Image (cartoon, rainbow, N blue to C red; front, side, top):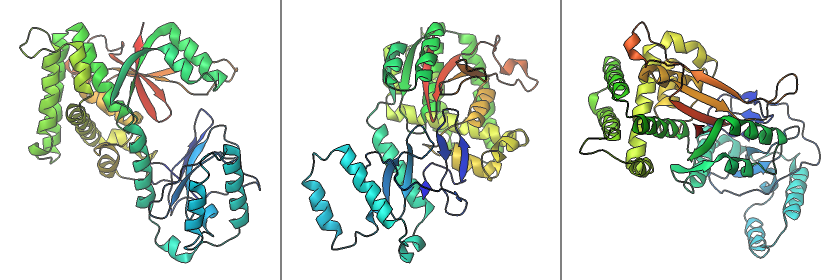
Length: 397
């Protein structure tokens, strides 16, 4: 049983919301799972790619559904050739089948085949990349139903999303409403942190018209360019990304021939040709900062993966669609000198049982150069809401 996520490093942790966070790996996954005879299945989606299928399964002991991949799927292990097609035809004729019936059939099939040995050729042909590709395809299909950047919504919209969910989350959303007025959602395609930061920061420049801040960031961008060059990057690999970001900075300042309105900023942020280029700009800046200060970041990276700093940057920072964590945020904040606040919305509670909303401020390091960071860096320019695996933009009151 392989539990899907984006990295190849076995079981990771139990998240604060109680759900299990797993990372699949043929070589490292070793779970002493003792499944009960009756497993509560949820309705599942079937994906026929590389002979593997996806199930949404409620893990025993976990309060929330966890997405897993079963290969070969036990409920299909006895369906070969002549039996698979009739079963498919029978499914087509039963479009009104209830969820409980589907769950019972899936559980029965699993119980019937749990002692069966999967065909040897299936295991020998299995590859981690197959499952990772399937997981990516499913995520992309869901992501394309949403724009890169949503409209500004009141926090009541977030409360409505969890109306039938955890009481702790509803209490935390109520606490959030005391300090924050609205939320703006971003597409959950693995680039949500960079897209959220991009719009929130450019919106900050557009609203404040802080030319001193723009000049300061331009100097830091030039330092980032020199860092990449010193690391051996050819100019043509990143120069277009840098040029487009600098152009957006200039356009956010009013009084220029190419100045833009807030509506135009939203439109551009939803344009893939603009949004993806600026995301790549941030990814190169982040990668350059991590490599330049490899001695600082290496312990944190080793806490996430066995990869070297260079391997981590190549596999988890520079490629589009790779999710971000505290390493990425710290590096980007330090490189550009922009303070960032991340507010955490999860099911965790204090030891005393009280409910509180936690946040963390990423305050950029000056590296001995006071001009690198903005004055008053204790006040964040960008505030993001983090829910496990996703970032959105928060608007303080």
